[in-house]
Image 1 (cartoon, rainbow, N blue to C red):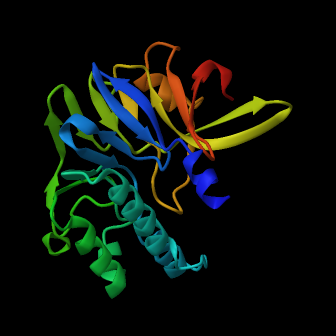
Image 2 (cartoon, rainbow, N blue to C red; image 1 turned 90 degrees about the vertical axis):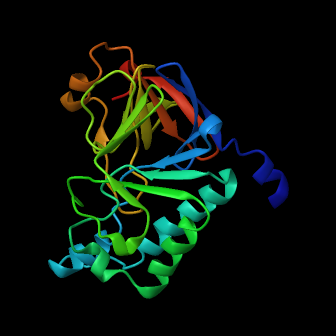
Length: 232
């Protein structure tokens, strides 16, 4: 029974950006098969410990949970390169609070592949001790990867944590999503404790000049592509 259920899960669907076909993974990652490139955004590692330091107690398991999910995605796709698209750490000092086991987990994920940390507004200065390379943005072919979206053609960005709410069969549900119009895309936050911003927020209207962009919602067993106009 468990095996049949696993086989029924469609972990990815196609998302096109600037003529490039990418796989939108059910986890919230993007995989560019031709480049063997995996992209994740807004891990927000150590958000729990950041909140705890300010008196808001959250279970301190977000980093381990996020890295565990990332490990599963990497095992599924076996990428040659991983790009972490900014705000990988929740604040400037988050790396100092990493448990030894989490540091080891990051090192294991980086082994045998290129790893690029894109600087975000939460983590503008990622230390070299964490391995990999740090960049403000990176262009590969027609695609530019950066943290904060500008609306440029061929851009894949994060930062906004898109989510969407839809109604179906008399029920409504809200999920993280990719937002894309075929010319640019904004990725969902990958982090276990990362929140979300509705795609109906005016911030998305500034990125997508036409109203016809699509929300690719992360469902339980597949990615659902729904016109943004049908979301609320």
